[in-house]
Amino acid sequence: MPEQRKFHLKKNDTVTVLAGKDKGKTGKVMRVIPKSNRAIVEKLNMAKRHLKPSQQNRQGGILEKEMPIHISNLKVVCTKCTDPTRVGYRVLEDNRKVRFCKKCNEIID
Image (cartoon, rainbow, N blue to C red; front, top):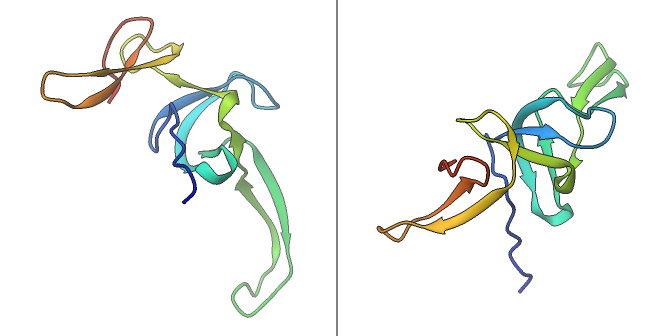
């Protein structure tokens, strides 16, 4: 059985891009792809796809879509201090494992 990968970000997290053509921009994670260590971020890393006319798409034309970004190039933005931050983990009294901001110690999720 393949190992289950764990990441510092989840779907619907607000993240900022650390490297690449969209460096410094922020967006919301739409999907995490564990197999390739990548995530798709809303309105970032856009690419143009040229489509031929077909039965489903009669018009054809150019479609812009989000492409995956490597997870190492993304950093979670804290909701309280609004800064890109590293994420730590802690277990609460009710045995829930939660993520917290390393800058302000605020619980992220």
